[in-house]
Amino acid sequence: MKSQGEEVTRLLQEWRGGRQDALERLMPLVYEELHLIASRHMAREWRAGALQTTALVSEAYLKLVGQRDVDWQNRAHFFAMSAKMMRRVLVDVARSKSYLKRGGGAAREPLEHALNVTDERPPDLVALDTALEALARIDERKSRVVELRFFGGFSVEETAAALDVSQETVHRDWRLAKSWLRRELRGRATDES
Image (tube, rainbow, N blue to C red):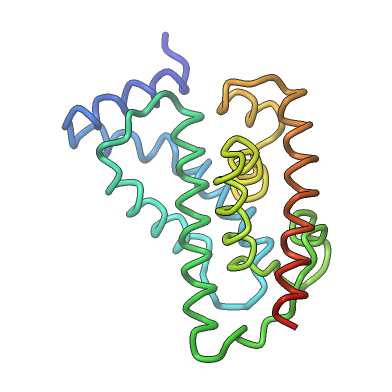
């Protein structure tokens, strides 16, 4: 008997191979976890009505469906891509809300709050996204660790499995990436003042 993870991997590979029915069988297996990832994002969502959890899942799903050329490795790879798609959707929403007016009236949020949200204000997702892109040019893995942990809600163990590294490496990358991003975001805030 196959585990759910093995079944998800098999269906992803069938889907990539062109079997549309595999996608139809995949969605019920992954929907609950996609909804959980989206719920984590929405717990950080700062503007009431900006986007509902189900809408975030739907938007990310539509982006995933368009990813036919991806060589799906396994279930963890699928959820890592899902987290990336949700990040893109949220950043697109944040950008569209602020296009009318530079900054969109959004308050600057230090990274320590953005990565450990405890108050009602949002992280500046556009600035964080830009900083993550800069980090990816320097160190792709550290950027992926932040993406999986912050945007995907992955645990250290899940992140290590998705990136095929040790948990110690994830801890180290997470610490260093947060430090680098804090510095980067402070620098951007200072430059824009």
